[in-house]
Image 1 (spheres, rainbow, N blue to C red):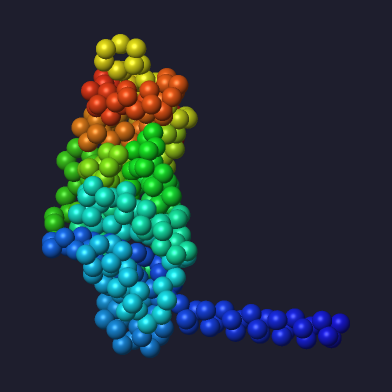
Image 2 (cartoon, one colour; image 1 turned 180 degrees about the vertical axis):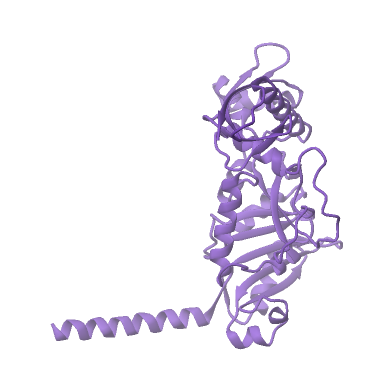
Length: 377
């Protein structure tokens, strides 16, 4: 028995020693940021944990980011910038713990956006389940401003924050794996998280019609956390083509059957809306002009002592979902996934490609029916 415990202690010592050396020999990347600058070059940044002495002597310490440092490099392309970053970092970069891939709007709107995602995924040991965030401003500034305001570890903080936003319904939950798959020949255009940094210089006035109908970067709020993730970046099969508001994203989640925090006001009464299940989608391509149909059933909970008309709630949701789909059509983005229904009408890939779904989709008529059951909360 004593021999067993001795061997166990020796094994623990050896394994802990190896682990310690690995940590010292590598830099664990938590956030990867990519920007395309005015000259056309690409700048890549990585946010990594720093030891106490490094953090204490760096600019990060004065910015309230003690424990993390940001390393940057620029090249003619993404691969050039990564090569320069690898060549100039004091340790080998380890991408197995990446939680976020932040891409600036200028880089995300390029025709080689799909290629960029492929190159990111091809990095050694890259964590394919990392969330993709499209930043309206500078991706590097977004990464630099991101810090754990609750807890100490940025990796855990980022993971929980992303899950929280997606769970409430105001952002997508598309990761790098899903984004690559759907952008590169899928039947539904991926939507990515929309992010930005709020400098809180604008007036704290919410949208006149709907306070949720806003986007990251200018939300009416005050916080020590300047980074915002609210809304979505839409794609058109090639690159990012526009943005959705947080409310539009919540409506899309509602059609999928899940949203936690969607509140609408009808006749001055706040109603908490939840879906009874995913909406039934249908695509009619038999006639000259295709027809996209959405049939949604949901519940609306109202405060005790107040009530509103079911027809008014149904009319509001129907109009807002119609406006959402019209916006997506204008962006040439099939973010709802009607293509997944339409493709079933074709026997071969060649027939589907010859059909020209993108043009048919953008010109299609839309019919939305919402059935609402009111309940007291």
